[in-house]
Length: 544
Image 1 (tube, rainbow, N blue to C red):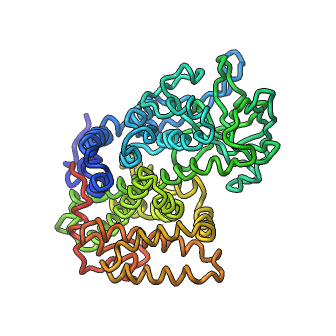
Image 2: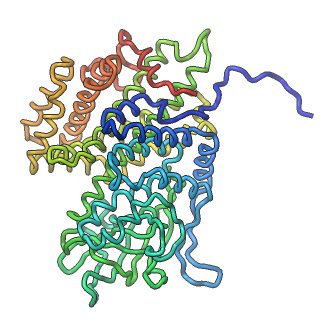
């Protein structure tokens, strides 16, 4: 018989059985701010239901199971036939099914769809980020397919369906479909114009045979893929179906699955095309132009995904410190820990507020908003995804040794945290994209300045930051070498302008002091002690 040597005390309860959406004050406020009032009650009900699901012990366990049981590649069946399939744990399918059912691929066909989806994406990321990859690819494929109206008419109803159909069969027989993408190759990486995959035209107009490889193929179990290949007129976008109309498998040879640092539940593969049948999307030679809208959508999802990881890390840290006692009181009441938590909370709210503002611009669709997105998406993708990793690591430290233990869930967040900075173009790619926009699209800078200008006069530190930014923009000497710094300042000024306009004064004050006014240090927890940090932490506390 096991004996008892002590009673377990001073341990926080699990953060479960709560509504992830409603407990996030910054997120709920952003949804209400950006959504048509006529849609808000319906959207709030849907998001709260998803939030309760995300916060439930059962769904949290599915997330853990999916992470602990990564996908397995099966190249052949028992008889030696090539099948190239990926097997997933049942928990993965449950999570993916709930994500599809929550409208995470349906933004294009719902009123206020991008804001609603963005909020749901941010909530669902907090369960298990891996299953968001195929949801993101499927959502992002829609604008690219619209370059070919006949293809869009055929595929869009399947991609925007809220029914998850996991079977590999001809897409015309399915109630819903998922999409992946294949752009990068071994020799080129982000330089997709160096791709060598060849596309040979067939007799039927718009059809080709592909021969080559893709070094990273996202979501290789999907029903279709958008890929780039070299056609006679240059780099071109193609749709590669997984299963052909007659039910046979399209040659899609999975060589191996990547053994990734994080994102363990999701499959990323290396694939070879050997006479693979494909349909052209858009014009020959305009592959990058055709697929660029897909890239923009997935980059925004990187911002949303990082914001979701940051929010969950902050929620866990504040929850732990609200229940844990040390040195005669609750950790959350200790001035130094309160400073750390407040600093983390400010960073998280800034990320959420910016991400939802960009989603609202997607819903608007006007010329001014499209111009804003062109510069704000790469700037946000650069900055928010880079802030994710240090924030998550600091949040794990708030739990002490408990945060270093796998069961806490923080190590999974730590492993996931660098991913969105790498995917869909790493930091230098985003910064150089910002430079190209500044040089070629003056309307984008005008839209940005109009946006941040609405907050002028509200905070002297923001005003000075805008002035300094204008000075930096006027100096083109060595501009490429300063691209990261410039992109960072663009993102910070945009975040500051949004918080000054929409966040509680204590949050905006802390952001402007620590990020724009030079009153904070390089590490989290270095905000001026005179700020109302207790209110900032309370705003970030999840209900449990």
